[in-house]
Length: 221
Image 1 (cartoon, rainbow, N blue to C red):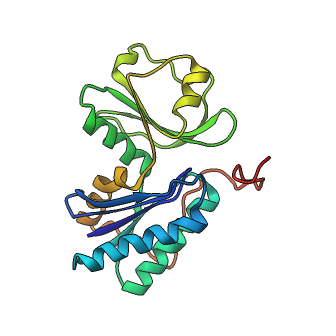
Image 2: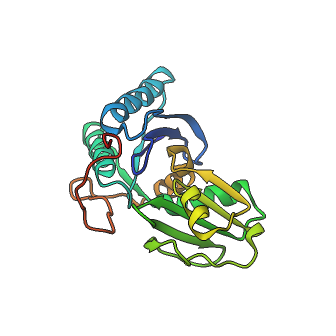
């Protein structure tokens, strides 16, 4: 089994999947930006599930970023600690690729998927996924960015869907909120099967942008 930790956005979550990427357990926090308080509890819930069902934990998968600086630090620290304690490998998951493929799997009529995570103001971390094409995640300003022709073949997934629709004044065929750990299971299983393990001592999250300190939305007036 693979334990997946997602901590890059609004609601931290965990999932357990088998080596085919089939989810056996999933749970997410219901309190906005509660990573430091709830993510350790969620991880314990997942570990308890593994023990109660006598499952064999083979690896820890974590969203590699980009996303919330603080959230990523918390998630990666937990993942690395578990890997050290249990002497198992670490998987760094491209959550944008994983979210996109998750949406494609559930909606085979889609031709293009935009996987997006909020990056403040009118900016997002985004990957545009299209069958047969390789893409990279980028930090983009939404205004006038997305100019597709057939919006009935396009899907959005992430936590910036409503912001994107408001700014570009177009609505895709499908919108799904994310990221959640269960959406990362297929990519996690692929990484494990291909032995794409990270060096636990030296792995760091992929931030894409420099950290800019500010007041958390959780405590803002």
